[in-house]
Length: 370
Image (cartoon, rainbow, N blue to C red; front, side, top):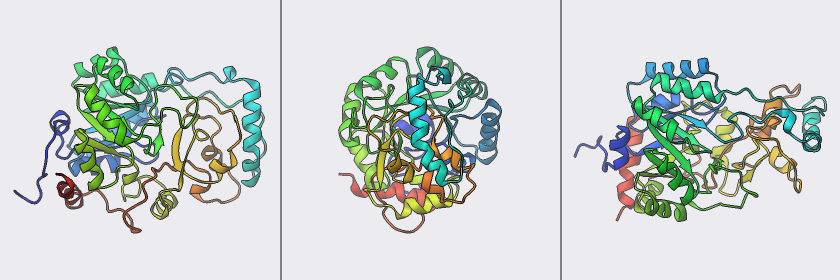
């Protein structure tokens, strides 16, 4: 066998038309055209982050990917109910707004900003035009998080030859999206960095937190479509474990943050590479939905019992007003820096996902298979 060929092919490879059953998560502010194209060119599936992009921005990003690769790629959107349409600012209780702004004011003062007591703005309703752009552009793969795309949207995608993936956190969610007709399901364990993919926000950070090792085989047994494992997977050992659990492939996010093609700030990449497995926290301060991120001032400063937060996507999150600061601060001091509690195999920067490195990573998976 040629050393450049994959050791194994799975149903996921055939379904998505890719060489390796490895998907790159569509992370906002990380997964732009350069990273997406690099992963797809290397044989995996690169996925563009479409959240909060206008139709024109999304169309331009898709064109940029197609200019960089002839391989298949995907676009990700988050579809929680509170974004379809966004919850109007006027519906946020006055007590919640004042409590949230009061909690944020010390951070604003530290950054040289004035206190705020007014309602945050209502985010623009970008989901309908983003969905239409995905359909019009006939992107090869549509990836959905934080909600069920529904049978009607899935059917529209299939009519245009678009494969649909949906991320879930429970067996019940997996069965619901299978009934809607999706082509594959991503089973996200609680170790995952970034947003928990719950359809509905749970009552606490611990509620519904099922680990990858426990969740994946349950979902594999409950559905007939291919299952992709996600959460805490960073190398060939994790890929082998996922396959042993019955998954047809893996989705990795944080593993791609420190690549050269990533849009992440250098300070974020450095902090990620230097972090340990206990350097993360699950919080809803950044976006109004629970997500795992590197611990920083924002996380520690907002640990107030029963602290209110604004609806997704978070209209008062610290990273937004950090950009307006009159005083310099580290990119990781206030921003949301998603990360899983896995630690990293070495203190050196992660190599970019090019064919030689990628193939070696995938072939190493066979070492850990029975």
